[in-house]
Image (spheres, rainbow, N blue to C red):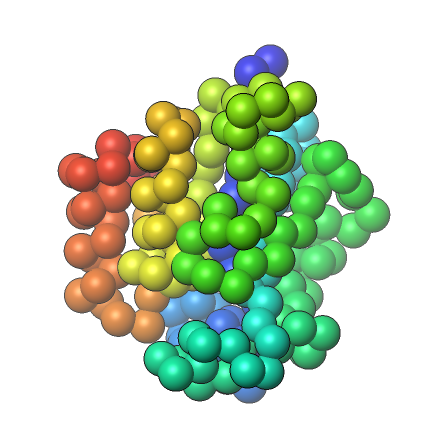
Length: 184
């Protein structure tokens, strides 16, 4: 079987839970779909990579957005419904990737994990499926990086959300028309 990876972007308490620093209702609405995708991926033998937006108290991003996803905080944790599905499944089938920029590739080992770095021992995936938040920020910039590496990408419309509906629609359109992602 060719390697397939489900990439779950930033489904963390600070974005999804109503008490979160940057939560928005649309993030909660996609959580059941993402839970089902994760469960199906694991049952089907696929790998799942969860990105975790992770910041230090003095992060430069806090000039643009209120403080969120502070390292070690409740807000930085993966939402409970996804933690439950993952259970005891460990590496390499399930990995957690801390990131502090919009792209999941910036200063992270994602290139190594996906086999897109020179000399990586892992094979390149035949497909990376993407779900998570925010469509027009972290999802978009990660899909852009996948496109730059010529990795086929499928983005699930039911599995992505943004606090900005217009930017959400624009990002989906750009991912399809400019980046070549399959939007389903």
